[in-house]
Length: 251
Image (cartoon, rainbow, N blue to C red; front, side, top):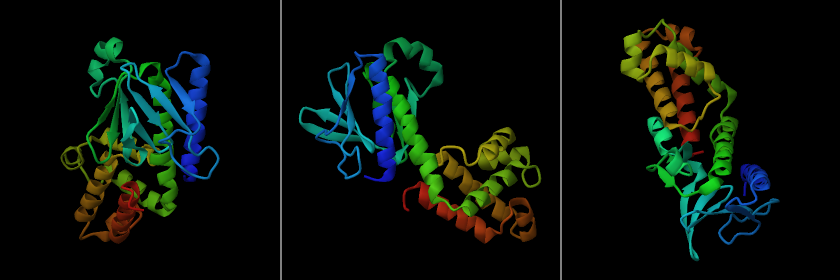
């Protein structure tokens, strides 16, 4: 059990305890030492939440993963190391209003390496579960990953995004063709950097495209690259490789 797991244990307890206080009938309960919970020596190790779904099944939510319980058999639904996002009710926003009454307690979980996982029949427990998953993404996908990145790496990649969003190297047509984004979106992303979900595959794909096109376009004018990004091609590629290894869990 790592320090991040301990922090998420605190969040898990606080969120579901508060939800239970507001709604005593909540279909979820804290379990101090669940059979399939996470071992460890830090305070709170083994703590989890059991959600009894409205369809008769059960889920165990731990600081590291979600487990489906079928009788005495358990199977992993998703490990938070691969979680990059979630959506409520449906991936298609236009369907949300139509589906709200029938499927208000459904979540889609997006994994880095697998198709979306659907959790349904969650009942009222869907709301505290969403809050907790928000904490998971915050702690594991942004705060924790950012701690693994040297500030110089963050600065170099931020310079790449700003250079791509600027008007010096790429036309509006270039942006759509090369990066699949318009200038307004790139300006927004460069302004948000790095306060975003760093584990998102879309972000890694964008940075790979940006670094590739920047270094290719300035291959015969390295000074232009330094002026636009603050770094040379070697540093850009090295920074991208470090970022890739961190966000994909290699380091």
